[in-house]
Image 1 (cartoon, rainbow, N blue to C red):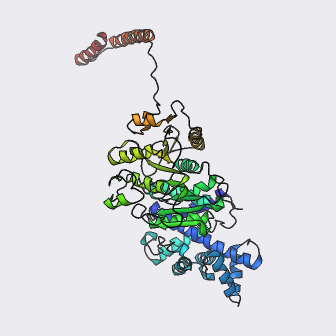
Image 2 (cartoon, rainbow, N blue to C red):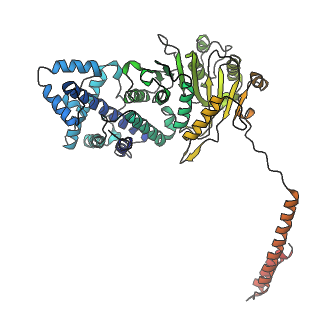
Image 3 (cartoon, rainbow, N blue to C red):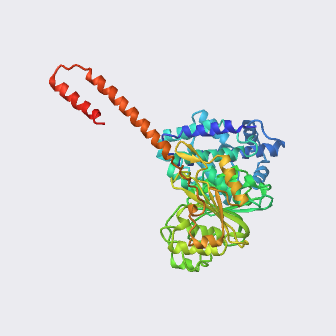
Length: 531
């Protein structure tokens, strides 16, 4: 069994081979891509060994040896057919990670062989199409010239040899991959917003989206701005039937889309449960056939992004029921919210992270917000601490939405003080997350923490959802005791006079070697005599 800590150390040390040659956003693609290739190759050899011996290999070298031998026999075609069916891909013996590692150790590593392995996997099944597109083995960022570029890749391959991906039990491998993604988010700063939601907000979102749906078998989770897929995958932590969850996700950035696909496999998600797409969520609706509504919708879209807001969207089913209003061109926040809400089942829950501006901005956004409130669609608003996200220091909020519920009340929670400072970012510990969920599930007003607002309360506030209007966290100033303050000032004045007298006496005892110096000191003394 591979321990999580050991695996993390090995995987993260692979980054040391690339750090300094390129920025974290680039070497993230190389390291995570090579880890995934090792996982596919090692899994493949383990399957070969299992088919031949009905056992898990103690050593991948032994599995490699047996694979090379059987490929020379007449049984090769039958074995490949079985592997193609069960693994969805095949590899020649010289395309495996073990083969690449042996070449690297003997200083005869060949990038063409590794590229051929990438190509074979990508061409084997639509599942893997374009998966390694971002791993450019011929990039100058690896070094200048063939030799240096090959050496860099070979060194990473040698470092990753210490990672036993076959004997990693449970979620150890998937969690290790998540750890890497989180570490890269920390190093890439603002670019991290493209692919990562920090632990605290992610757990709150997922626990809320899963509340009441933990027992459901065949649960369907949707994230139309999925990044690395971490939000959707976090939902499995709160399901009693995690192996049956179906994941539907869309991502605009091709490299991030590929990262999400790798993440799914490394978490053991079966191919038939992965429904991921590379595309623009707002530009064209997806999915539009078969499953179009989902039990849980989790979202952390780009904040206040620009979009076309073209007139044609007023006839789009996602946006057409909100008084003919569209989210403004300069701020697509409500366009993302309405897209996700459109795909929510009648019995489901949606949780989305957005900037606070969506709670109180007017014009079209105010009109959309009013319609949502009139329909009882907004269930809760949770204010998060500032500086939680790598791509922005601004405070954000989680909006929870439901369809066709009884009542139109809204629970407001102020969690802005539930954090710890940690280097550059504020982080929410488990006790902070638990506190938010406790307030959410109790759904009651708690002084300075939560307020259950009636629809009439909200209407009286002109549909403004700014949290301080409902949760008063201000502290009353302590009443001043004037008698005590007067006595304190008198004592202070007496002390000042005594000290001044002592200073004047000390200065009076001085002797001077010039009249000019004596005049200057006397002038200085006069300042204290006047006090």
